[in-house]
Image (tube, rainbow, N blue to C red; front, side):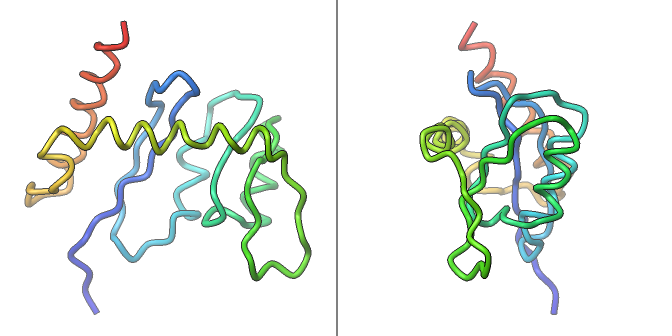
Length: 133
């Protein structure tokens, strides 16, 4: 069955600066994009919600020298500990997406072609970054 929606994934610094975006089909699971988003970036922590809870992703994060701060899924058999104080900083990504929403073209996804939509996402992110400076 075809899927006409798209899903935007992002990696953002704790200073709200965007690092990388990926655009996928709406039915594509978030965790499949995580290695692409974090590849090549050095950081102390990778903070993500329960949708990103996978052993393979945790191994990738540790291999890059970071600490995985990922809230475990409710149905996980083996409970994984995570730093709840650090996890509170996950709101940065939510707040970044909130800053994208005023750009109507991003929020409503009017673009017919994915590459044009992603291009405007980068443009809106550039404007957000410029406002911070």
